[in-house]
Image (cartoon, rainbow, N blue to C red):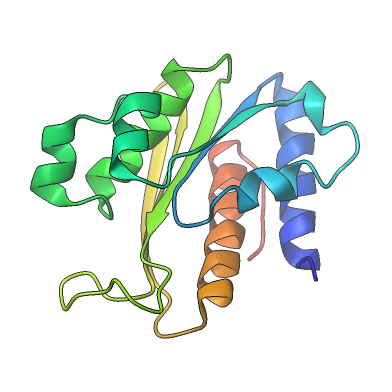
Length: 168
């Protein structure tokens, strides 16, 4: 079932983008396109949703978004630095003026002491240089819940960056 709160956050993002004349791009790793799916749940989204990048592997992050290999090597794919680079890459490789990027450990495996399951970094960036980053520690929830919580948080951040009053 689709999360109605996330659908409402997506609708708000689309409305804000329309009001401000902005196009949106997404760059997703652990959410696998969930944010793009939520944005396209609303009819007419194509007038402001430019594209979505699903860059699940490190190689995809490098090739598709231009995230430097050494940045991933130094900080890991799940990091503030990589999330910010993903958002920047989405802007640079699209016609969008605002982008949101998500990278994290959705589990149930893959976590470490330093980067446990439920750790998610989300970055949002506008063409004018305005940017946000937030780190989330969703804990040992189900993979589905971590992905859903991440998508909701990303849409809320996108709204915040565009000047809306979103809820999550």
